[in-house]
Length: 274
Image (cartoon, rainbow, N blue to C red; front, side):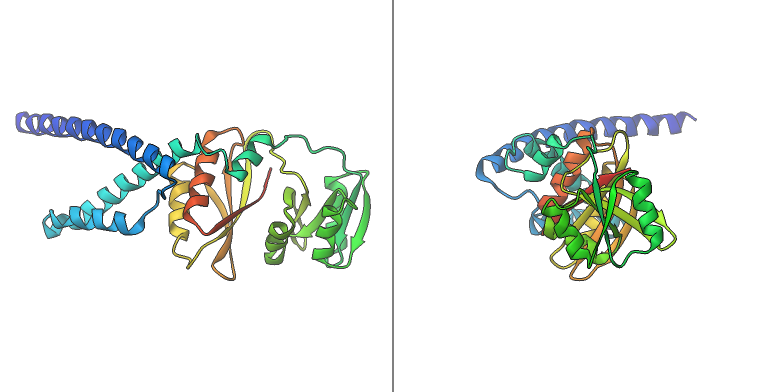
């Protein structure tokens, strides 16, 4: 055991040096973030990151290059997340962040619910269950149902949770208020306000990417911050609807959404519901 203890002490000394150098690196990363904040520079620079990784790999023997790549990618990813953490505190122009901070936790009075003409009686029953006592009306199409909510002719629209609805919510700036399962599939109730549920809920995002290559990066961001993905729906044109679990009052959610918004072509918050 004497030899093993000697090796462990040597490893402990190396670990201490790694921690100290990591701390030094993160201090410098803070300086980089401050500089980029003043110059409005981008945090995510794939080509620069690739050069750093390749330079580090070239200093390793072939049998360790794959391990070195994982180490360097992790280090760069953590450094990038630290920059976003500092930048979000100073970014007063981020509209989604403002919407989240100003969002209410109260549903408010629902007097009228419009139902798409494509929905079945089971969906109408779901609407009555979500909003008992509300008057029900029928719209000729999904788009018409959304327009009635936008124009104040209805408080909520109950729609099937499908591809077209994701794009309509973005088009009309509507948000999912709640979700219900029916024999014909899941339906969502949508309204004009962003409602934050009390406790942990499901965050629904519509994300546009340039070529679809950013998709693994988005998943990595959520995984790093312990935000569990529960559903992914792939849509045309390098778009996808993604649901994950999060608590509305957690600062982690702001960090995650801010980073995803900065590193993808477009992001739309569709709703936050239990």
